[in-house]
Length: 280
Image (cartoon, rainbow, N blue to C red; front, side):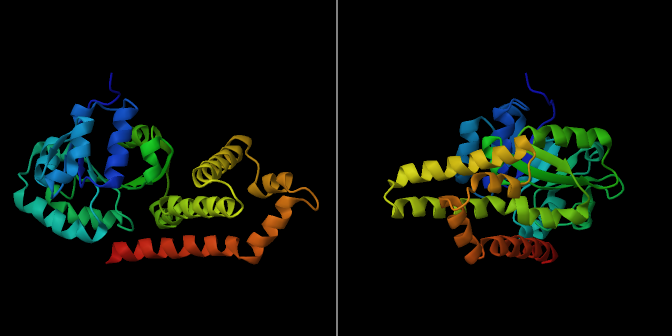
């Protein structure tokens, strides 16, 4: 039995949309038959059809026939996408009850309200989110915020959906770009660390596949330890570093290589770029 009765739409069927949609079906939040997705090239939506979702190449069909609509196009495509929807949209009393949910990096609630004002600016309900692709394995990290017309009940629905795919947290809109640098872009940073750890293992004679598995499991275990123990990472690191041991020597090399500073800078630059993309 699905936990939500609403029909869920995705305008744009790329990786982020699929991570959310497939995750919701896998977790039993909705049935595949409740999901409808559109994209410019119908042949690229095969994985959605394999999932059991309805697919089409008409964005307006998704907007008209679903209750919660995820906008999953690239930020620079918002204006032409909204213009196309406005041209074909037939105003309806149902517009007031629809939830428009954006996953567009750097795109403010005000920008979204202006883009979809054709649905009735006085009633339009918009939610801005910043998810990440780890949703596809149920370990996502998403923040969200709604405009003034979004009700507490609406937010509860969105939280149910997003929290089923990992961790979800409502935050002030002013925080979303900063979180983008940590959680939205963070998986790419972590994948780079996993690859580098594995390369180090290969250099020391560990077979490639084994090194990758060990590196990934090591990060998974370390992350769980932080979350479950509540200890500060520095405390946990010190627990691993025996005086004069192998680990402290390696940590010293990380410090000489400015790993900490490089990651801080990466988060800062990614957060700034997120804001820039929204302005463009």
